[in-house]
Structure formats: structure tokens, C-alpha cells
Image (cartoon, rainbow, N blue to C red; front, side):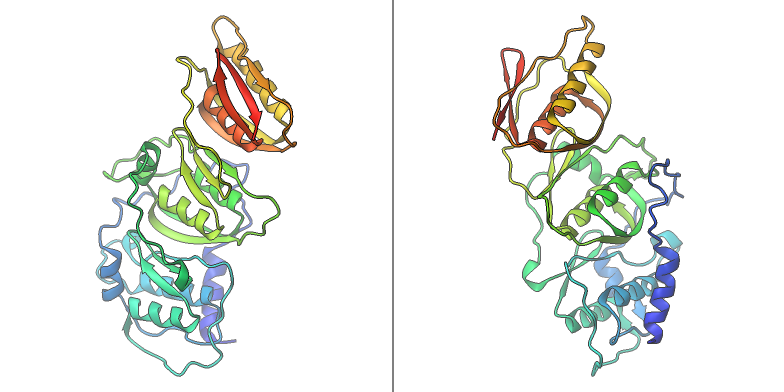
Length: 344
């Protein structure tokens, strides 16, 4: 076996165990870095010198993992271990293998040159982003969005994860990891309370999606979510109460909430029917309204049966009904104090 491949496989086996041992358990708080990294990614690509690197007979993932590890070992300008190296994300739906024989072998080159060489060997390119290097198909090079970020997106952009490390995850597993993990710091170097991260998955059925492997440091939650969605060929939509991860175009026009909408501490549906989800809301509304009044909900006939999976915390009944309606293929309206769900 090529010695580079052996080294990468050995390190990956130590640093990226999957097994999802954390599922169903409280995530332990992670060690805190003192502040998010402040050296630009472009500067690191020019100043970190890689002694040698694999150029043949390894997969792209193995080569990138080797460069990621080397970037941390040879980042001599960073005084603290947590600030060393460069985040590298592979965003492509197929595994690539470097050619069996490469005519060029370089030594003692900047990390950026090593990345350019490796990605060109498999007909890919990389872009330098604020917190990482992203490797993509040449036709899929992204330009920065000029859209003003919503309040929720801005909040998540300030919540910095000191580490994000997992491998072979489904999109649901990856987002759940981010939702339940603890230990964020904010951009002002102060520990923050972990406000519940509500997310809603609304994806086309029957589509095989690439598994997700990430090994990132000092990454905003918004960026980690974006990479998870992009690797899985899905998009992000930031609502007022949750992050919507979807590849389905739906009507997103706002619906004015009633002046008082009780707050549900927890919403947890796993493949629930529409009737089951709405019965839950009705029961909770009676418990939470001071006058024990039940929220009025009417469902118009005609929609196909669709299972509903939701995991939400500290969310209003109004917002919960919006997500139930979208996941079940309905449009939600508020008419005379009553909610009405109509098939799309």
C-alpha cells in the first residue's frame, strides 16, 4: 500500500470514528479555544509549507486528509494548537482517485499550491472561503451571496464551533450532531448559552445522497450547516424560528401570527401522520392556554398522505403549524381566528 494512503487511513481511523456513539446521549462540552481564528485562509495557504504530499494511487479524500493534517503540523505561525491548519471541505458527489502515475512530484511547497496540484489531478477546483477551502466541480464554483442575512442566520454566524468532526453521516445525522452538540463560543470570545437550534428537513424522497464527512475547527454554525446541505445537494432557508433544509420549492410568503401563540417546549414527531401531529397541537394548546381554549384547525380534503418528522424546541404553535403544513403538502392560512390547511 502506498505509504501516504497508509498514513492517512491510520490517522482517519483515529480522528474520524463514526459509530454515532453520541446518538441518544447528551453531548459533552468541548474544550474552548480562546477566540476564533483570525489569520485569513488565503494567508495560511501561502505561508504553510508542506514537505511532501501524495500525488498518485490515493483517493482525493485521503490526499486532502493528509494535507489537512500536515497543515496543522506545519502551521508554525500559529502559537496555539487550536489555531493551526486550514479547514478543507470536499463538495462533490463522487469519489475521485488520483492517477496511478503522476509526472510531477513537488516538495516544500505552499499548502495552496499543493491543493491546486491535487485538485487539478482529478479535474476539480477549489475556492477560498472565509472559514475554509471548498473543493468543487469546475462548473459549480460559487459566488458570495449578496442577500442580507436574516436574524437567525446572523445569530448562527456568530456561534462558533471549536470543532466539528464526524464521518460517513447522513444529512439528518450531521444536522442532529450540530443541533445537540454543546460548547459554542461567540465572535466576541464569550461563551454563549446554547439556544436550541431548530431545523426542518424537507427533502425529495427516493434520492440517494452523498454521505457527509467533516473535520473543521473554529467554524460558524451557519457555515457548517451550509456545507452539510451543499454536500447533500440541498439548500438552506432561514425562517424566523428554524433552519429549513430542503430541495423542494415551496410557497414561503409570511403568515402573520396571532398576537398570542403559546410556546411548545418540545415538538418531536417521527413519521407521524397529519392527524397525529395536529392532535398533538390541539392537546398542547388546551394545556397552555389560560382559558383551556383549543386552537381551531381545519384540514381541507384532497392531499396525499405524507409522514411528518420534526424535532423542535421552544417554538410557538403558530410556527409549528407552518412546518406541519409544509411537510404534509398543505398551505396554511389564518381565517377568522382558525387555522386552515389546504392541499397544494
